[in-house]
Length: 91
Image 1 (cartoon, rainbow, N blue to C red):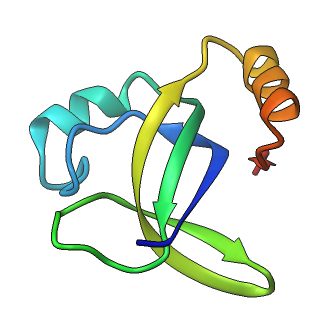
Image 2: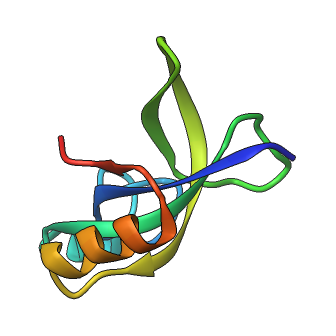
């Protein structure tokens, strides 16, 4: 399965249903957002995962993702991105 690893500012979530349909996700949403290392799958799989929007080349796609690591602060995320040559999305 093809995937891309990148660092993106992401909200905390509990499941693929999200805060509109899941009470636990609604509670997690209160934590806000921080940078996370995520694995975005370019093709959908057989497991329900949350979705995120990314650009691959000039094409916008919505891909399923898994959070691999959360960073304590923005500085830690930037250092990890530079050290591991991983794209970091600031928007």
